[in-house]
Amino acid sequence: MKKVVNNAREAIHGIRNNMTLMLGGFGLCGIPENCITALVESNVTGLTCISNNAGVDDFGLGLLLKKHQIRKMISSYVGENAEFERQLLSGELEVELIPQGTLAERCRAGGAGIPAFFVPAGYGTEVADGKEVREFYGKKYLLEHALTADFAIVKAWKGDTYGNLIYRHTANNFNQAMAMAGKITIAEVEELVPAGTLDPNQIHTPGIFVQRIFQASGLEKRIEFVTTRS
Image (cartoon, rainbow, N blue to C red):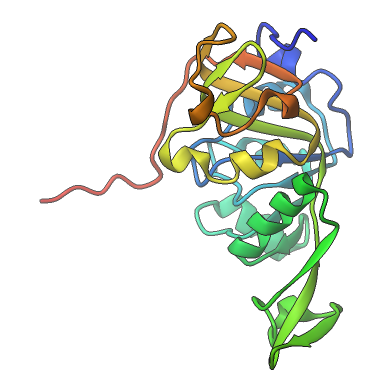
């Protein structure tokens, strides 16, 4: 199976209106920025996006929000994006806020073929509304369902032509779990190498989960807030 494509535009082929997408990363770290730019240019709309957050106003998923291409966000954090907050409060955007650990586990469970699981986070809060509650060992737990997506879009540090991926440090956040949970998984990588180059013991995502891969270009590696000593 030939997995290597030339660029992000080719990689997102088949993403249509009203589909569900998973997008890896945390804040602006480890986000698939090339694919996000390609999605903005494609003018696809009605998307449900599963991501830890929505980036910032002028970068990451914030670019899709600005053009109202996202119908629903499933995420755990709103904080750094004023447009995300505005659309949420105005009712323009449907939002499902999930405790961060629960979001990570729902993605991991989707990739592992586990349909649902019980978790204590959120019991006694609005998060529990409408959810089944059971008691285990004297403690209350909520039933949470796994998350999957039509496409999972991730970013890795290195990848090979078979689709094997290695993430680097914090940039692994959500990428590894989401790569397993998409019907089709797209990986943009900082460095694309021939098959057999990577140390098998260092691979985080086996290539069997990845259908499309390409070498990213023009990476900015932005930081939300630069904090230095005086």
